[in-house]
Image (spheres, rainbow, N blue to C red):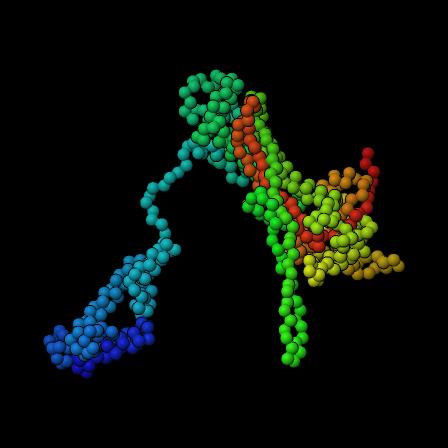
Length: 523
């Protein structure tokens, strides 16, 4: 094959790839490289089999302007294209070698990837896979930071709160009194006062009060962190039950939210007679209840007297009790709705004949009562008269009724009226229905010896029931230190924003209940 024929074949290969808007295949690349090596060998020996005017490479689409693919212009363009291709391959190989991407070199070259695209791939590879550069320089905690953490954990340990990993030095500080901690904090803050250990507690408290609004002051900061840890523990450990049968929601502000509309069902398909017309379907919608948030809170103080008396509980157990009180308040408000049976969004009582979710006569925990309440859930219809499926999920009972529930659901057999054994149909629900017992019901109904209702709730995914909304979904109370005119002490506000709404009555059934009392008389 002459030099001119080799150049022509190279040009054919490149033209074919360009016409199909693709890179050369592996076979085409191999043939192109073989031809190029042969051309370079001819150049080194000075052979000019194709004539002096022949080009030394081939490139697709080059040489525009003369219309002659075999002319001088086309030869110059082909030579330039080959040189550009070599440069592309060389840069790709260098970049991939330098950044550990050798396995991807062949793919980049064969796919016709540009140098800029490879450079972007290298940067992404470094971002995802490469380890950060280690300079040998690290920034550690300051001595003041370590002291504050140790002081916070020592106060919590002293109050009897459990901490999984106390800060270093916390246990050694447990024996410190409030005045001892105050002296160290004042010294750390660089006070100019001398002889702090000789000052009485009242004088120390006055010095501490000066740093109340100083963000760098150690003592107020330690109290803030201690209180925050304490009330989070109290919020986490309080025993409430409302969140086991209600939904958690979120609202962005304190405006009254009309919520949203729920679209009704589309109409059934109707038979279309021959040459008949399709009938137009107009579906309806229904507005769901309004929701609104309110703010609830309290205020407490580390007073001058408490500081002098070294009453550490005011920054440990007291905040925990307030955080627990927030959860208990929500719990009580939910049960007040269930017990008091107020009118809801449609103007009628939550439980009643209009809603078909109230037993006419109260009973204890019996098979007949459970069957009736389960059927009441199953026979509810949605806003548009369509059947819905609501599976029973929770039974909510006052304290003292769980014993009967346990027997009812966990006995495989029951006694019949003929004093014979029969299969217990409620045994199949033992793992499906959760029994929730709460003494709040007892308290709202007057205590033992009074009639107390109980309820059956459907699964949350089947139907809406009662929803507890929080501002931006935050259910842990906020706490802040502030100034209260006329008060001698460090003052904190603790508050939380929530709202409770009945979203749908169909997911709950009420049994008016019977008198609940102990089996034996108490002294």
